[in-house]
Image (cartoon, rainbow, N blue to C red; front, side, top):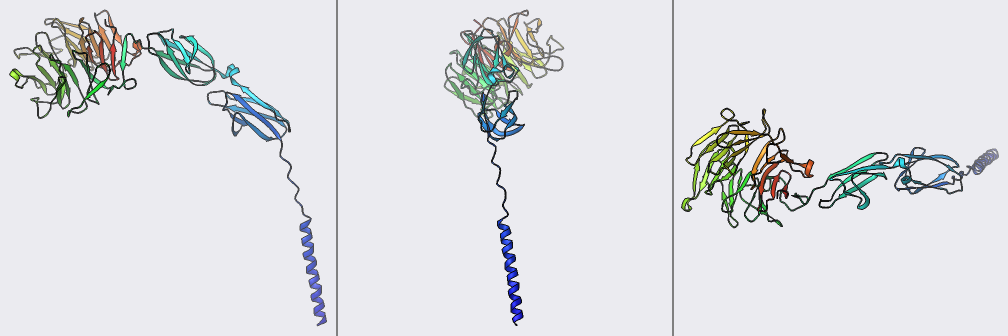
Length: 479
């Protein structure tokens, strides 16, 4: 028994010693302290500001002005990057405990700058850069311009100011050009500069009070009195194909669902249930000297008149009428879709002309106008054999002319009070006074988007109004 107790005491002593030894070994095992962080530092700024900072080709996620810290003593490659500028790389020497700074002025480095080549028509326009007058006029090059986006404006007397946004990059030439609109010659009305209800115009007519009426392909008929716009709502839809004024100062306009008239107070609808039209897809309206209305449709020609106040309708043809006009002898001329021209005299006798029995250049007739001496002017659409030109028939002989741009469609022919022919085409407006001197008006010589001309009219002052697929234009140079 004594032996067992003695052994147990020995065992407890051994275990206690082991625990003490283990505990002591933990107490003397110490981790070395971390080395203090480097204290190198540099502050980087630039003109202009906002450059990304790269250290040894690594994006530091910082932009000038800013600092880099915790750098060891040594040499470092720093690169500054910004859109439109060349990258700029330099070496800095860092010494711990010092706080140097660097300013990179890109405005003093011609390699970082760009240029703007400024020009205008006409030349001699003042140049403004971000609304600041540069003191220079076109044509000239603005040199040593910091890269960036600029608003370049041109100003010259009697012309509309115009501007353009230009992006300048390092060591690159950038162009800024504008055709300045001569406001003594032109006025324009588009959704961007006026309250015009539509820019997609299809026709135009002017009444005796110089009220402008214009039809559109998407917003019906509207008028302009020189100050405000007025829209006319009908049940015939939003597309107007044609319009004209009759002898009583009543505007008539045709649509794919019939036609309507407005006499200044009453708007009358001639649709499916209120007219004697055999086809309601109205393409043209002509007025003779007796103020009778001739309605050209895709299903023929119908006359509307009111003897003794009673409504009368007479249908003369079943052909697709594209265009029409009444001459001084009250003959009604029609352009027939792909079939040439037809003419109805006052006795209701018809004659037809095609490329076979006349000098018509094409059977695809798209425009007609009657001259003051009874001659008929004819324009054409584009087909496989012909795409431009005019034909004149004086009652006995045919003459062909080529004042319009090649491969264009003639949409309208208008003859003004001076017997000048105005031709509206897909490529611009043509003023035709003689075969030797046609004058074309388009963007290249006006600065205006005068193309897709669909209607032409003259006001009492001699101004020519032009309806186009891009808006309404007034030419004031016809006096």
